[in-house]
Image (cartoon, rainbow, N blue to C red):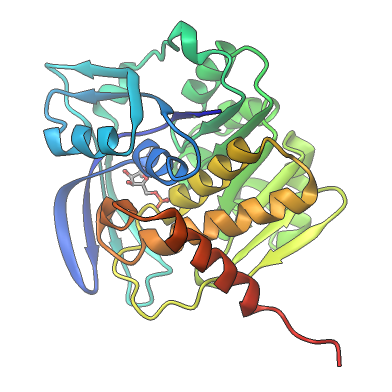
Length: 304
Ligand code: AMP
């Protein structure tokens, strides 16, 4: 079992109230691959970097047993760059710059042996590229897709087309409102489900996440964290944990989707404890299990 991951590989410049870093390794595909690698391996990565992508980034992915055959390296190109600044409460983030660079002319080619992968996770990236990946896959069992305001605003028609071909859409509360043009999240999820995905997951930052299908609304708590250093990658780590658990179990029942949401939240909570991808290095399966169980205790109560 594996997960096929496509998304950005980036050099991020991040400012938080606790410090800043310049050109640190990030990108949706990096966080998703690292998070899902704790459940299945190797992870199959599809993406592109320039000749300036550091060796430490490659080493990080190799250490997490990520298969890099699908990673294109354009020696004379520049890696995608993103820069963002978090406000005091860490829930609000301003994007300062997005330089697509090598992603502007990227034409993903899926290696032959990746094409039958059953779980596909389309990380935040141009929705047209997400679809080009899907077009080359042979009957995936589940397609999970992440997106963000950048694409909802700039590539709305492309995104709406991609949504027709996916099963699970993961997005945050403000993105759900933007995409659906509906302020109420339960109604927003209904509108979005009408666009294609049978399952919608709405992340609410430090307030947990909602899983919505035709039959259920499941509200997952957020892990009460005292030390959040850098929220970058939390959403992608969530998607990676979610996808990894589904690939490991090959079970799409609603009960298992709920577990996958909690594993997603678990990986996101580890991610934000450190800067950049540091929080996803060297976790143990036992640590992940312990935190998963803590989530259950958070909202358990006796009837009498
Ligand atoms: P998250 O905090 O989970 O929303 O994801 C943060 C990551 O998304 C960063 O590492 C960025 O490099 C990456 N990112 C930001 N904007 C974009 C974009 N427009 N397309 C692809 N990746 C992006």
